[in-house]
Structures are given as C-alpha cells and as structure tokens.
Image 1 (cartoon, rainbow, N blue to C red):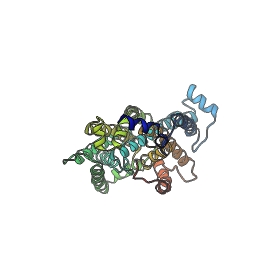
Image 2 (cartoon, rainbow, N blue to C red; image 1 turned 180 degrees about the vertical axis):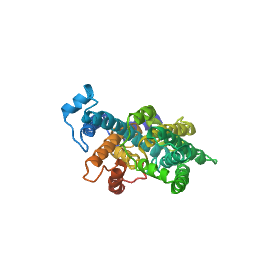
Image 3 (cartoon, rainbow, N blue to C red; image 1 turned 180 degrees about the horizontal axis):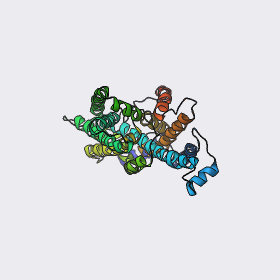
Image 4 (cartoon, one colour; image 1 turned 90 degrees about the vertical axis):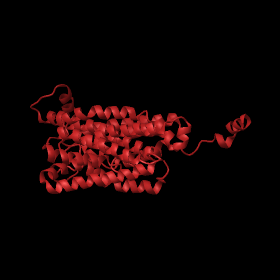
Length: 354
C-alpha cells in the first residue's frame, strides 16, 4: 500500500494538474481584478442616471450635504441606498444560487426554481389583501417570511421517505411549491386590483424606490448570510462527492443540508424581500464563476460574491440610461441579457457537471 502510494505520488502522469486546476495565486489575482471592476461599477452607479452629476457634487453631497440641493438629495437618498442594496442583494443572489446548485447537484437550481421567489410573492399578496400593507418597508418583512416558509416547506416535503432530502426530491419539491404559491398569487390578484397594482411594481424586480428604510431592514439578514456563505465551500465540496462519500468523510449530510438551506433563506429571502424576484443572477453567475475557478466551491463562493453585484449594478445603470420614456427596471434588463448568455453557457459547458 505504501509502495503504490509513493509511486503514485512520484508518477509524472498523476502529478500533472487536471484541466480544472487553478493556482491560488492566479485565482487571488483574479479576485483583485474583479474587486477593481466592482469599485468602478459602484462609482458609476452613483454618478450615472437620468441626470448626471459631477465629482465635486458627489464630494459635497458626501461631506457637506445641502438638503435644498436637488443633486445632493438624489445622491444621498436615491442612488446611494440603491447602490448599497445592489451590492448586498447581488452578492446574496449569486451566492444563494451557487449554494443551491451544489446542495441539490442540479445545475439549473436557483432561488426561483426552489420556490423562494414565489413564496415571497405569495406573502406580499397576502399582506396587501389581508392586512392592507402598502409601504415597501413594511411588506419586505412579509416577503422575507414567505421566502423562509417556502424554503422550509421545500426541504420538509423532500425529506419524506427513506432516502431523505435527495437532490431530485428537492428539485421536484421546489417545483411543486413554486406552482402552489404561483396559483395563490394569481388567484388573489385576479380578485383584488389593489394587490395586483402593488405587486406588479415589486414582482418585476427592481432597485428603484428602495430607500434607506429598506436597506436598514434587510442589511442584517443579507450580511449575516453573506459572511456565513463564505465558509460553506467545504460543505459543498463534500456534498459534490455524493452523500455516501460525504458521510464516509465524516460529514453529517442531513444537518449539512439543513444548515445550507438556512443560509439560502437568509441570502435569497432577504434579497427577494428587498428587491423582488430578480432572475438570471443566481442561475448563471455561479456557472461563470465555475468556468473561471474550477469546481472548488471555496473559490466559487468568493467569485460569486464579487461577480454578482457587478452584474446587478451594471444592469441597473444600463436600465437608467436607456433612451425610453422611463427607467427600465433591472429585472427586465437582466431577463433580456440573461437568456442569450445562458444559451451560450449551455453550448460551451456541460451543465450536468458541477
């Protein structure tokens, strides 16, 4: 046994790196470059919009604000909170998608497919019709609770049976919960025009109209989820080997899945509650991260953390400067951009490989 191990270690064929291998130095350099891009996109999000502002105006708005200056109000009360929310929600959605794809071993898993978005939408509709909620800062709590309830229901349904919550059962349970919540949402909105009008603005997915109150209410959940998610790579790497291998390596698969679902609830639930059901990011960005850094989820989580807000804020800025009668919401922009990009990824990669 010792001889064969030593021979394998010194064998040139075994020592050659696999195609998925990436050096730590190269991956770290890539993260640094992307952080520079993120800083540039963040600055652009504050500067650009339907009305442009100069650097001196931004400086004065930050350190010498004038409540009577319209540009200062736009920067401090509109663009700054939506930019911060874009950073947090973008990172949360990308990391939630990466966790779900590793957790279910399903390359098409994302918060929408797993019922999180539909659960949040159903809760918002109920809050509007049953409790008369009309303020965004109030119904974000209902949206978060709905997302958490949908996530819990998906895992609970998938856990029935001898095998427990297997990847296939999780995907099927997510589809069933999504269909059920969508039916509730559709039925209620058809009978209540006020609920339909309010839900239409939230359900399209947007960073616009989200003020400091929304940021303050959702930031603790988003930050907690992001920090915890950065340490889930080892769990996801174990699950990627299969339940039997993960168990043999000492991982408690059932508890691991429960913990990962709790993290997804914080991430996707908080982001969906604040911004609505934004598509594309949780589905595609983890694949882009995987294409850059390989199958190691410790790096996939880091790259998803940085790439996702770049994509979300870029789409938000693009929607602001498009020459239409009004601002195009970020959910619409991402939907238009996401379809061809995802089709390209399907052609380039085998999505069954995680």
